Image (cartoon, rainbow, N blue to C red):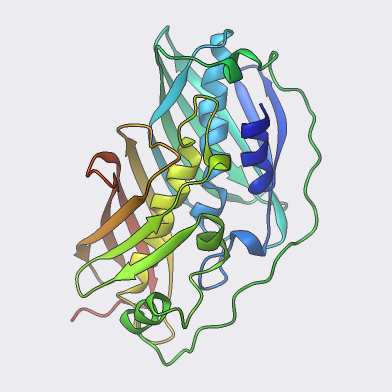
Length: 301
């Protein structure tokens, strides 16, 4: 349990409860979870979302067996403001002996919905001593984080377009953002692709000893947020509107991981990106598709 508790506390997530097929978690989203623009987007609360959905399935099994998330789809709603508590509630809508389907909803302190989603989980054959040590369903415990830590990155020069911003991040002249630093991630960008290269840490592990699915989701979605910057004109705002990820394999927490993003389509209001997470040996661990919402219309050249 120490490892998963370290993971949750790193993302300022406090344990709540599992009751009647509903898993509840809370998270304080402060500056340490902001991106390079100082914004709080899906990557900031991805660990809580995945923990809520996979947790609801796992606790419903009633025994310490292994389970993993196989697919997760998220859509953003109200924007998130830093330095507040978010709440996640995931409902187990169907389960058999092997598979589970779950919904999830994220709300802010005003009870505005900031994200909704659907996930699928699957029971696997492996287990671990860490899973066996988990004693029953979680109760309403855990101290809520309620004070900001860290500082937001400085504003980006509004005269820079997206390609210039990514180039400056790659050269170390613009911060990749506190969340990238937390994830031990560096940004690489060329004319066609944007890559996020991650050095996994032991605190990122789940009770099975591999990278927790929420961390995978945070890394891949953050790569998409950065890639979406490329197509902006100077001063243009954008956000991650939709994100779908398939988990193929569980990444190890050693070695290097790379998320490569490519543009599928750039429209007047929405850009669609594909992302693949691979290991140093070329093995694919996850694949995702993201929709980036631009205000106003993105550059089309």
